[in-house]
Structure formats: C-alpha cells, structure tokens
Length: 273
Ligand SMILES: Nc1ncnc2c1ncn2[C@@H]1O[C@H](COP(=O)(O)OP(=O)(O)OC[C@H]2O[C@@H]([n+]3cccc(C(=O)O)c3)[C@H](O)[C@@H]2O)[C@@H](O)[C@H]1O
Ligand SMILES: Nc1ncnc2c1ncn2[C@@H]1O[C@H](COP(=O)(O)OP(=O)(O)OP(=O)(O)O)[C@@H](O)[C@H]1O
Ligand SMILES: [Mg+2]
View: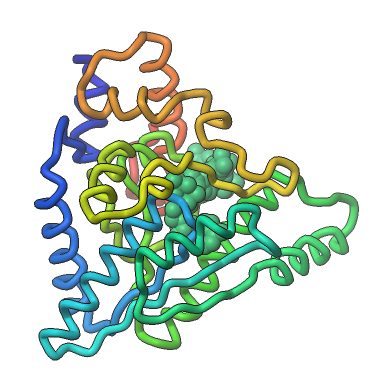
C-alpha cells in the first residue's frame, strides 16, 4: 500500500469491512455516553434527504428513545433547512418518515442567505459568486442549528465521515462546524450499509450524494464536482489498490485541505511547514 494511503486510513479510522449491526450499537452508545458526559439535553441535526443526515438522524433518534426509556430527559430536533423550495423535498420528507424524530422544526434559510447576499453587494463593488453563496448557505444552516442548540442545551450533530473528510469536501465552519460526529470512521458505502441495516427504504439508501449548494446547478452531484467517484474514494480508504491518477487526486485534495481538519493555525503548529 502507498505510504500516504496508510497514514490517511489511520487518520480516518476506516476499516476494510464492517458489521453494520455492531456499528449501529456502537454509535448509538457513543451518542448516549457523550450526551450524558457533556450534561446536555439532546441533539439537533439538519435533515436534507441525503444519505448522511438520514443515518445520523436515525441514530440520534434511537439514542434519545433509549435515554428516555432509561428515565433520562433528552430531545432530538430534526431540522429542515431548505433554501426557498428544495428541488428534492420529497426525499427530505421520506427521510423524516424513516427517522421519526421526537421533534421536527423547519427553518427556511432563504431570507437569511438572500439578506446576506444583498448586504454583501451593498458593501460596494462586487456581488458574491454562486460558489461562495453556497458556502454561506452551509454556514447559515450551521448558525440555525447552533441557535436551536443554544436555546435548548443540545449538541449539534455533524455528518462528516471518512469519504468526505479525506477530500475536505465540506464547508469550513459550515457543515464542518459541529459538536459530535457519529458517522466518523465510516466511508460512504459503509454509511449506506448501516442505513440499509436500519431498514431505510432503498430510495434513501441509494440516493446520489449532492451538496446542493448552487443556485445555478440544483442537485449537482458531489462526484461531478470532485472529479472522483465515492467508489474510488472508498476503495482507497479500505486499503484497496486504485489507479495511480485517482490516488494522486485524492492525496492532492487531502493535503490541500489539512487546515479544515484541525483547529486554526497558531504559532504552536508546525504541520503546515
Ligand atoms: N492553507 C490554509 N490554511 C488555513 N485556512 C485556509 C487555507 N486555505 C484556505 N483557507 C480558508 O478556508 C477557506 C476555504 O474553505 P471553505 O470555506 O470550506 O471553501 P471551499 O473548500 O473552497 O469550498 C467548500 C467545498 O466543500 C463542498 N461542500 C460544502 C458543503 C457541503 C458539501 C457536501 O458534501 O454536502 C460539500 C463545496 O461544494 C465546495 O467544493 C478560505 O476562504 C480560507 O478562509
Ligand atoms: N437542505 C438541507 N436541509 C437540512 N440540512 C441540510 C441541507 N443541506 C445540507 N444539510 C446539512 O448539511 C449536512 C452536509 O450535507 P451533505 O450533503 O454532506 O450530507 P447529506 O445531504 O446528508 O448526504 P449526501 O452527502 O449523501 O448528500 C447534511 O448532512 C445536513 O445535516
Ligand atoms: Mg447532501
């Protein structure tokens, strides 16, 4: 195996195969243990209709149900965060039907994001690009989750996992801003395996991943933007051999996004030299 590949696999904690039922138990226990240790009262998570938030949301709901059955007060707020009307709203509703969250709220980020865009233009000289506006959408979603979390003493769940972390394919302090990461150490096909083991409908398990951040290209697939497929990323993370060109693309992204996987750089850091 390539030397850097072994180092990356160790950092992401991905294993070549998993036992889905054991992963469900381990991750529900992790959420319960961490909630108790942090003296918080539950969780909040944005539900998009995508694979990652469907799995993380269901795990959070299971954790809260078990805590409640043990006599511990806890809530899970599933938060719909559409920008105006979401083109695949039916998938988000299907995800909620599957998750069965204890509490459901909707915060439409349309006015906040467009207000931000307007104020940005009023600053003078330039308008914001569709790409940069996409990152604002992710950061407004983060802000809404922390607002609810702050009001109700809840932890913000993040959906980061190996296959997204390795390429830095998330918005820094947007969807990357969270308190607890129940999917970490899984790759994308393992996320689907665990979701299938929980009995999610095939339409959700097989959903094509999209960051869905662009006004101009609704539902653009992650794979189109990345120029790498999740099959390739997962193979790499499971220690399999991938084409030299693919390995180089993954490693280039990994190295360029190290700053996203650490705390802000200070005089005490030397990893960037
Ligand atoms: N070397 C360095 N050391 C320290 N900081 C550095 C830096 N280089 C950039 N930065 C900072 O980081 C910023 C760039 O990072 P960031 O703001 O994240 O922006 P960026 O990485 O350019 O864009 C986010 C990417 O993540 C994708 N995404 C976002 C959200 C969700 C999903 C999804 O999968 O659903 C995907 C999105 O499609 C896009 O490709 C710079 O503006 C700068 O502030
Ligand atoms: N429209 C949305 N409504 C609610 N939450 C959202 C929305 N878009 C993104 N999020 C939040 O941001 C997270 C990151 O988005 P990301 O696209 O990586 O995950 P996903 O949509 O759950 O799964 P997938 O990667 O398969 O599309 C989501 O898991 C979710 O918590
Ligand atoms: Mg998505």
